[in-house]
Length: 414
Image 1 (cartoon, rainbow, N blue to C red):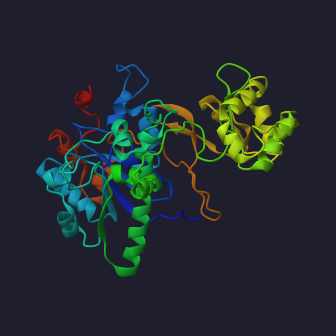
Image 2: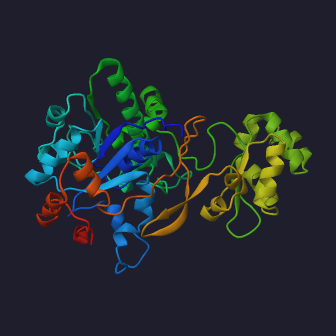
Image 3: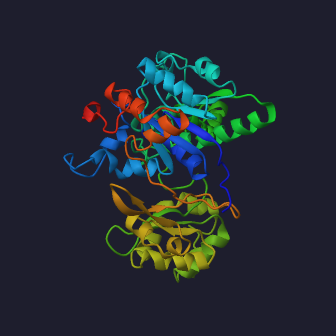
């Protein structure tokens, strides 16, 4: 079977929750051997975010959130705060290509595991740190969460309706954006190491990564000194451009007219060709000035039709449009199903479910969900035994000393 692109690359993953684990999930999907390392007394917070009752047996292994973010990875429990745990980790680093972490700025240094220490274990190691605010600066010690990074990065100031309050997105955008950037940074560092033979330290502040996503607004402010107004679903220049109610309960469809030709096509689909000649709507400038009136006309039409009908009619006419899909729509979507977007995955404790396949489709190097998120400490024997050469009795001693475990202490997340 063809090898996946990153097979042969080993990553020690110290990250937790979403941003870091998303990065390593992307790399694991491409074939890297990712070893997720969790503390016996401070496991990944996502293990506690389960839809199941807390008294469920081994509930920490059954969180959909955790298992989704950590698919295709191995799992090992190791207490880095203890000298023996730290020594074992450095032995593992000597056998890894990359270490990635998203602790607070000071944590890795306080553990005595800074880049110089890791580099002593393996000279060409690549270390990626993902602190929320960076490793220096007056706010370096502040904690970053998905619930506050969008506000600090400036994204929330752009989201919302005219004359309304700023709005956060519903998915904590900072995490997957930073995770994607971190995965790209790892690939670039691996390419550089292949060329030069040297590893490197990469710092990626999650807040700055998200601000860079809206860089054109920062540049605009530097030129004009003015903040852009919030415009909701509208466009700075095009009209109509928005989200309109369709027939049915909580059904919506979006559409956009980029130019006069789009609007003529929309008018014909609506069976209102006279709209294109109406002085209020006959030009881009006129449509933009009269958006309230125009949106009311369009909403009266869309609300009488099924969102998929509107989507198909407009798309066939060359007008950009799309229905607003919910989770259940995606799960049952015939297009995604025919393309094999979903793959059935079986977890040894959590059961069987459908999960999206890796987004990368390499023609000669297929990717898939080869394993679900690891149970806590599931691959201790592989890491400590096969990689580090410890005997079964030595691994048992590590458990007795609390350096490793197969059952996490969840009290820190209660």
